[in-house]
Image (cartoon, rainbow, N blue to C red; front, side, top):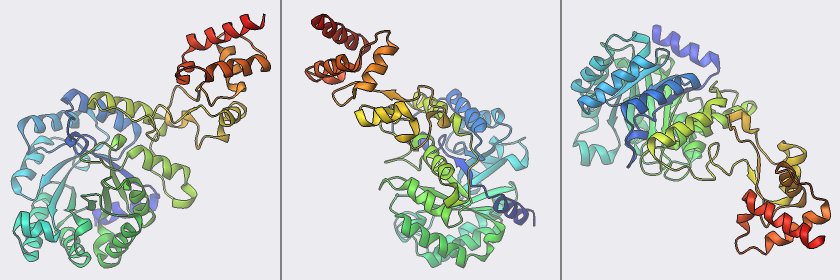
Length: 401
């Protein structure tokens, strides 16, 4: 009854819960190796940003992983801290030990088991009935130790829908409070996501006692679109990472999903309730700790997303920033704001604006001459360097005089 009341509360609230897996799935990306102190700093900022839960690690992987998980748990009292577990008792015991002493409603386990035909035959060598028996035993065992138990059907997107639903029914009846739909190899399209989510909702009546979570990888560049499609079909929890960090092409990017839901609240009717103004700070921290480089054009975080070189756009931005921006920089905590890049595509109004900022006033005619000089440069992009721009302007003034 408690689980059913919790599910109904979440669904009545109209919120989409964010479960961030940067510290576990993101940490698995080749080349990423967060230190324990990195994980604590990221976890604290995730808590301040307003995520509901964090997939904080894999307690059974090593003693270091278990110690890091315990350290993270101590640093974020208001988050649900989850440990990933295989469907074996030893993993669940390791998670129980690492999270010992934490309030029951603030700790949980995510138990995963591969269920697709390829995994059943080639990796696990198990029949469908044996898979169901493992799910029942592992989830029952976990539910004796945790109030919050999530079951993830690994490779769900390549599993027969009928059998997938049977796995979920078994998990919920054994005590799972969340069932997760992972697109493990990032193969789905939004249309197929909708088909799967509808099939689960239609064929798992036990969903009135469990939340439905989704977890998308970005191999086709569709992880965010797939997450939004799942929300439109009633998914309760979005599992994602900061910056889309993760294996192969990465995961659904938390900041992109959250921003899309906020900007299109009338379409989706639901919101993550995250503090979007903390997103840029969060991105900087994760990129710094992971030693990954952010693409210039990365939505929300990229250096170019509030920059413009095109003259028509620059003129519009000077008059009113919303003319060529989908949202204001401050909405996501972007401190630098709009940047007007001076180059061969720039207009005279942007050039005059920049020179004025640098302490030099020129008229429209002189601005045209400076722009002509910029276009003659071997690399016009160099004109965006203030010292070069000032020198060009001074040369044009000298020629005129």
